[in-house]
Amino acid sequence: MSDADAKYESLKGFIKDKGKNGAVIAFSGGVDSSALAAVCHLVLGEKAVAVTAKSPTYTAQEVVDAQEVAREIGIKFVIVKTDELSNEEFRRNPKNRCYYCKKELLRKLQNVAETLGLEVVFEGTNFSDLTEHRPGFQAVNELPNVYSPWVESGFTKGEIRSVAKELGLSVHDKLPQPCLASRISYHEEITREKLDRIQRAEQAIKEIVNVKQLRVRDHSGIARIEVGKDERHLLCDVSVFDQINGKLKALGFKYVTVDLEGYRSGSMLMY
Image 1: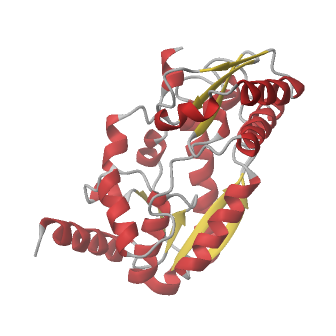
Image 2 (image 1 turned 90 degrees about the vertical axis):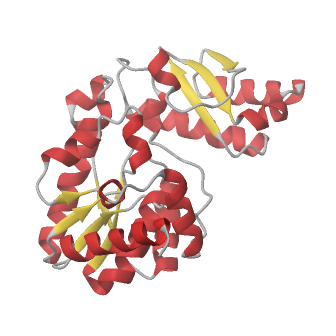
């Protein structure tokens, strides 16, 4: 048995043991949560339920996409509403903002599990994440009957993508899509209006130019546009600049800029 096979068997063993009385899976429709949901469905069958949060911090399209992936997997799918904006600590937008968001989500998932007569909650943090700024993982450690199977089994992001591909999941190569709040400078208040403006700005840009990796960072009303490093050339056209500038200023941005370095995860930590 190869190391990869041994690790996969360890993962299934962990899920079977902890989830023997049923599990709710925190399900965003991204690679990590989708692969986890698929494995849980294989191991636990009807005792595994995927739950997606409907929140102002995520686009409506992401909920639709998650539902499609759940249908692809064949797992039972539930939508719950979360309201991070009701939490003053989250709205203040400190550098551990994700802790408050994650705790709100996990508590809602615990409630769903209890309602459905299930015992545990699984979430999709992976081993690679632990090398990055992940304050949300503190909430996982604080709450009872909440587990991170990828971490427990030592799976890296790349290894999870391989599992997703082996399982035939359409999202195996999907790019990361963190919440809209991650586009707002730390310590600037998070509001529904800002989240909506960012969502509409990113949608407008995608209608103008075909980029896959995109973030519109909001620095006190200044839009800083990041696209994938290999996509930067797609913006280098005066007519594209004019269209993007017009659309984003119409949404209320005071200035519109392009980050010449391109997209990189965690760039807001530098400001």
